[in-house]
Image 1 (cartoon, one colour):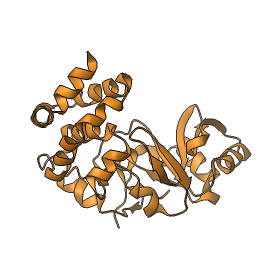
Image 2 (cartoon, one colour; image 1 turned 180 degrees about the vertical axis):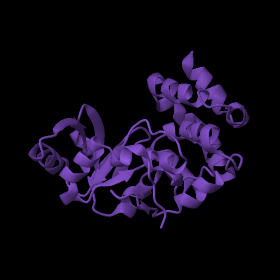
Image 3 (cartoon, helix red, strand yellow; image 1 turned 120 degrees about the vertical axis):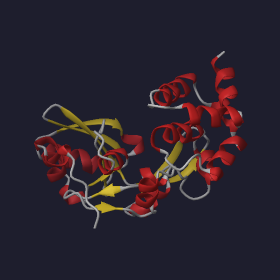
Image 4 (cartoon, helix red, strand yellow; image 1 turned 180 degrees about the horizontal axis):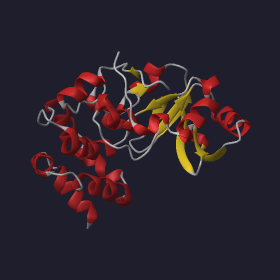
Length: 236
């Protein structure tokens, strides 16, 4: 079994939050698991749970920890332990999407939660002891340096058009296998959807893309499929 062993896994704040949430089957999720597998420092440690956010608040406060209702409508509470914040979100599935945001329902199924995410390498989970849970084959893609949409790329992009830019950002940072052809074709087909996004969201994503050590190949792919021109037009 694959395990992660980053420093944050065993520090006191992390252990306190996971212990408080033990009754809700907490799992680490997303970028912190991905980065740990790559030997990278995680900017944030995110956790998912099998309980509604109101129960999350009760569990945290019952353990003497802080609980900030940062996104109750989306199932998210920020746990605070020793001055550190941990985003804790109820497992979810999408009920409706409009290209910018999703209406969600809660679930207890990790595979359902994974299915609403963007790329396979971001649909990775880990237990408190570091054991990795990989419902969608993200480990193989991560090891191969493949940036692959979960399921149908067109459907994933239609849920949130920002995923067009996220595709190129993750390609710039993590790809060792070139630009995924199916993902690129889907991004090209949904260029017009970028006009629905706020300048703030687009600008934030572009800054993160440009922060990659060598974003040239990703930028060239963006130019070739019309995404770069659409972003530049939206900035005017």
